[in-house]
Amino acid sequence: MTTYKREIRAGLRDIAPVAVAAVPIGLLFGAVAVAKGLSALEVALMSAFVYGGGAQFAAIEAWAHPAPIAALAFATLLINARHVLMGASLGPKMHLKGIQRFIAFFFLTDEAWALSERRALERPVTGAYWAAMALVLWGNWTLSTTLGAVLGSFMGDPARIGADFAFTALFIGLVAGFGRSRVTLVTVGTSAAVAALVHHFIGAPWHVASGALAGIAAAYLSASEEPRA
Image (tube, rainbow, N blue to C red):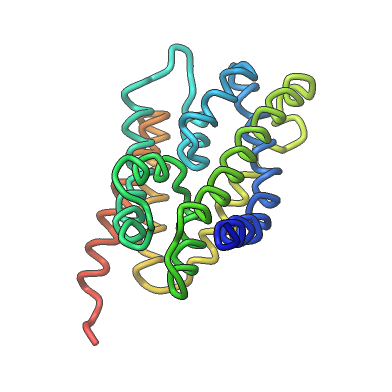
């Protein structure tokens, strides 16, 4: 029992800074989603069952009435494809089996994966550690996006105060921190150029999927041309 409690405390301690940082992003998502026509209940259900920040923002960006289901599903599939690699990397390091592992990986996020990989350098990732960390972040995201939807319904269109650009600015900052290697520059440049062209000539939401596919292809071709050590 002492070990169990220690693992829970460790999970809560590690995820706390991430949960705090996710609150303003969740609030923004909720406000933008309401401006696109979703209700607060729909936002809550989307966050609880989709639970993918990047995929949710991409879906809302391309949201229309009626919703282009096939295009949205394809775009979010590409965005979340990284979870396959993260799951393959983390799976052998977790003390979970069978259905427990499948349930646990529903709560897989970039942050949970990174924290668990860091912990796995010193000790196995236990179910108690993962549950404490993953459930807190999931609940935090669901609540903050729902609150953002409720507040956004009173605030009106976030574009009036420029809040709709906040997440775009965040992504620009993240991309700027990727480094300046040739592979990174070619990947980002190709993805951005293709997405812009597709958006201009075809329109949303196909620019998301097209940019992602172009970026993947550019990264593969650029990496294969890198000199081997």
